[in-house]
Image (cartoon, rainbow, N blue to C red; front, top):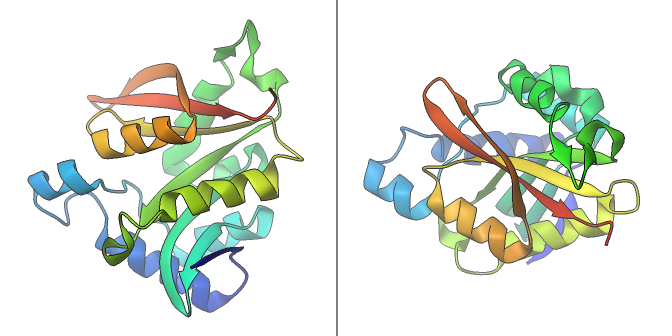
Length: 183
């Protein structure tokens, strides 16, 4: 398995297909609790716009997509309307005594590992590639995770993410976590 940045229409189609299989509500609640889930279904146009701004990170096994991690820069904030509230909220978050808006950061918009590749270090490969590709330009990688998605919260903590904020949207609690590359 190897990590790359998304560059072809076929890779974007593979992301959308994997995303559909792992959307919240597509699996029984017990499976979602154990295996995790994604919450937003992107359109092909949205995904292309995000990728044109900053390519998604992929882990592949030959031509098969093992996992993906989307990249959303502040400049691409308007691409996915469901995330506008996240970006607006982040502009008010304090991090280490200063407003986050004064730091160089981007959002990992969604991460997903195909079922047959889980437990095979795909998650670590995705984030190692984030660090390699984006740490020269950014100090922080930020994402938000549903409090119910305990698998994802644990996995992010193992990588080095730490909680920096919490909020509630439509009755659901979210944890904003950051991986600080500036230290």
